[in-house]
Image 1 (cartoon, rainbow, N blue to C red):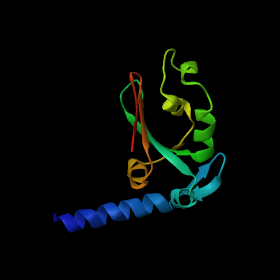
Image 2 (spheres, one colour):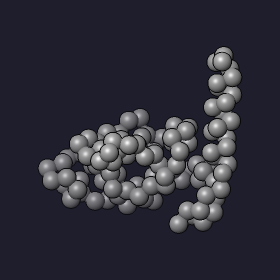
Image 3 (cartoon, helix red, strand yellow):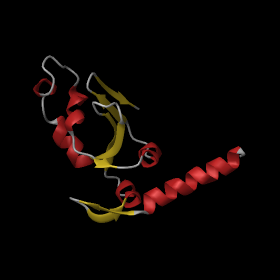
Image 4 (spheres, rainbow, N blue to C red):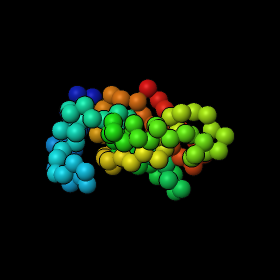
Length: 118
C-alpha cells in the first residue's frame, strides 16, 4: 500500500470515530466532534492500568479546573507538581485516534509515573 492510501484510510477512521453518536452522562447524546469543537476539552489522557493497557480519553475544562483546585499532596504525599490532581480527573473515554487528533496537552498516568506532555 502506498502512503496516500494509508493517510486516506486513517482520515476515514478518524471521521467515523468523530461522528459516531455516544451517550455521555453529563452531556447527553452527542459526538466527539461536537465536544471537541465546543472548545470544552482541556487535556487528553492516556491512563495505564495495573495490566499496562492504555485507556484514552478527553478531560473537559470544568473537570480539569475542579481537579486542579486540590493540593497535589492530597493524592501523593510529598508531591509538589500542581498538575498531579489531573490524575484523578474524570474523563470521557474515547478511541486513541480521537485522542491523538486533539491538539491539547496530554496527561500520561500509570501507577509509578505522572507526566504532562505538550
